[in-house]
Image (cartoon, rainbow, N blue to C red; front, side):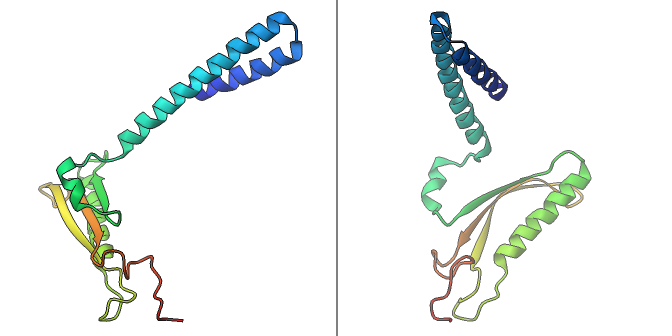
Length: 153
């Protein structure tokens, strides 16, 4: 809605500039002010949208998390028991991927991720309504999945 209004104002501004005259310059100033107001509204909406996407974490737990940690929230969508079963498969996949090795005994090449289940709400059929996981590097940044081994060429 804001985008459509902004596009409309930009078109009106272009038409007003081409018309010229004193009345057009007054209208041009009003249009520019409306564009500034729309940009402010857009910025506020962007911040609100971002905060709705970021999961809420207990402030007491923040000191335990590092920049290498990821919090994963899984929630079953619409679809009843099938959605809950899919959410359980998804959680199992995340856990298996994070815990998978693949490196040598010294840890080179290994993903080295640890998984901590913060909360899980299971159904009678073994599905999951919702779950929260923390995936973190057990090496404190060294030898992680995305790092390169300096001793190999």
